[in-house]
Length: 76
Image (tube, rainbow, N blue to C red):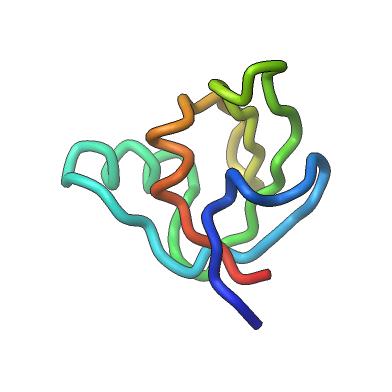
């Protein structure tokens, strides 16, 4: 199994979060949305210019910009 940013997954793929990088505020926000190591996240949609990513967890569906989304590392 390899670890990669969620931004590199194909649309519709579900993966387990391996780690969340970034500053404390971003990590706290992602944790509140259900993005924590060991949890499953699905890449639901990607904007045409790959600037915004729509993600889903058991707890919520939300959009992240490319910089924030690239902080979410998943197991492939």
